[in-house]
Length: 273
Image 1 (cartoon, rainbow, N blue to C red):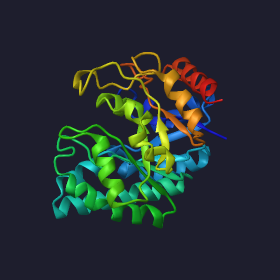
Image 2 (image 1 turned 90 degrees about the vertical axis):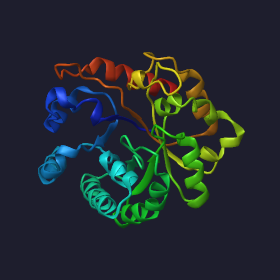
Image 3 (image 1 turned 180 degrees about the vertical axis):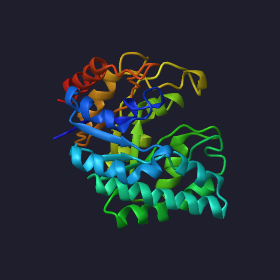
Image 4 (image 1 turned 60 degrees about the horizontal axis):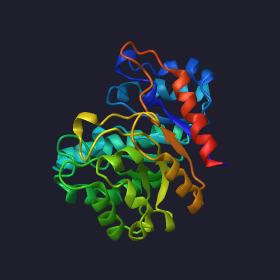
């Protein structure tokens, strides 16, 4: 059965002190089927207490979103920073396995350096996949935004080099580069026809091409994406996997809009059948 997940990053952020303990009361109010756990850089020293908390809480967390600085370290590409990237990635894998996750979401490139040194990102992939597999996890590379090229170009390059590539496809990230339409084109049917897409992030976007001022994660209906077409296509191709909602749900005071999240869940549930 297809599952609708909520990213913990949509619920926990700087305004509410990145307090992971909020998951206990929030999980009782949300109608999602489970969660995608978002790791933050400030949580490495708290890893064991977070692990114990989540194991006690027993939430369904099939997807783990790796901490974003990993991709930035890889992008920089010098030996010391690559070593740190792999060290951090293994910490993420250990926590992911401990809380019951099956899939990882990774920003293979990230930060200001982004994809400006893509050969380093591509070269790091097989080692990352090897580490993930040693923990029994499926590594999914997200189509994150670029500041030099575009994510689809890099995904094609990765797939050419590594035919076993798994992808986490984000609707907002694709729209930012005007690449959402490519999902429906025959030239890119390998994305879904060969099973490379293993998970979808379903978020709205209200900007133009590489419109950095509008790179916000919006709930469905708050932007301009055609989700009727998107879900019609998803049903047509027979995708049986899961979805994550990532739209920021907390305000400047850290209060979470539970109703908004639940409305998103209801919308996706209606459209996936």
